[in-house]
Length: 138
Image (cartoon, rainbow, N blue to C red; front, side, top):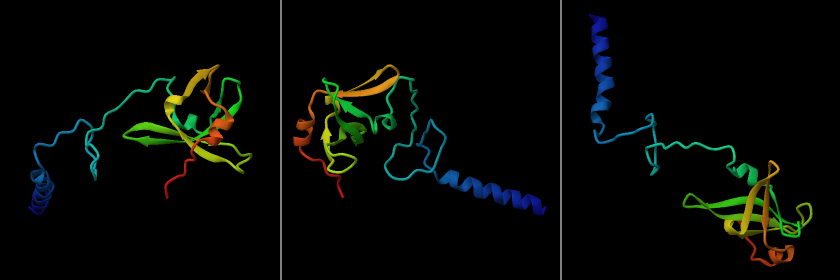
């Protein structure tokens, strides 16, 4: 009799949160506790082997048409879930005197050449040194 009372009480406690939930909520992914304004529904993607990853971009040297290294990709600025700018390190030597420049992703061509990612840009070292300096927000 005591076991029956414990089981009945346990079932009642487990069912009460389910009754308090709205019946209009639907999910296609396994339910998980979320906070904030993130969408509750997870959408999954497939990734092909020839897609670019940000981890491969960081540190990638940028060359120009004369095959001169004009800068290095150090970061990506993302706005509204899209790459808004590439942050380049330009000038300097061994980290001394270098500065950052934000450029449009459309101005940098990233491609796969001989199984290696390469980045090219139609510019010169002097043009990038003269570009407005990018400073990270505090």
